[in-house]
Image 1 (tube, helix red, strand yellow):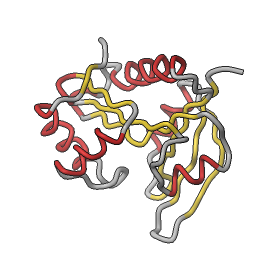
Image 2 (cartoon, one colour):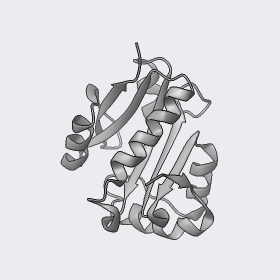
Image 3 (cartoon, helix red, strand yellow):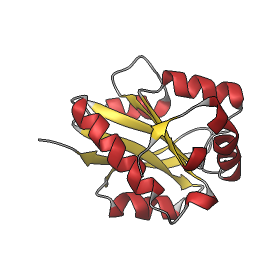
Length: 159
């Protein structure tokens, strides 16, 4: 299975899955999703949008609390803003396929790290386990005024 470009026909499935897991993700409507896709350096999907991933170059002009935190700790990284794996895509290797494709993309672009955050409040234990199992290591924790708490993870791609 090879991740492919996200097209407008995939939006309903992506939005449906995002809504299902919104307690670990931020809300999205069609306009937000279009903006997210346009802003992303990497935006791919599997299973007709049942799984999708969005990532940015950490050195881009996109400013967000997670990018700011990561930029204080890393150079030349690709920030995984969002991975959504809908229930029908779970257990089918979608997450691993998206991360493998992203790793190839990142290496070709000269990045030396992949980075992401996983919620600790509300906790997302499945995502913590998944990231550890595919070679990510904890980088640090942060608590934000809006009540969100996260653990940042990094995976080194090259020396």
